[in-house]
Image 1 (cartoon, rainbow, N blue to C red):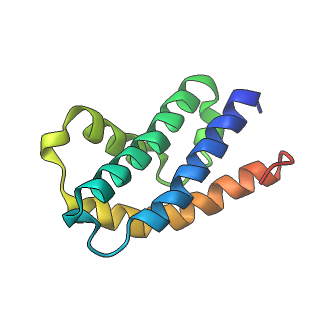
Image 2 (image 1 turned 180 degrees about the vertical axis):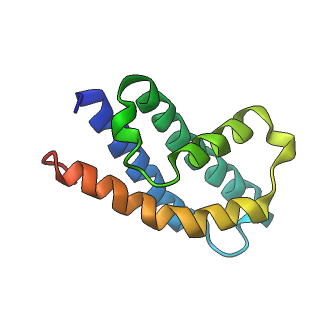
Length: 112
């Protein structure tokens, strides 16, 4: 695995862990928290966009990677179409598995 791919995985994991701390009950009503949630999701999605270009076989090992990239695209290009309930569902359903998938990939390469 390329060094930049390992860095993208580490960046995505860090953002996902921070997301679990920031996306607390009521985050949608707190502008600063909402912006933090959006930024962290964007970081994860952008890391995956870059991995898709350089090592798509690694990205294929991450559950819901295409959906996460799609969420990034909505956050970046369709900010006026955001649905906070859908974002919350994505966080609740995808982030724990995402962290596990990244840990498996990083552990296999001496990081984690």
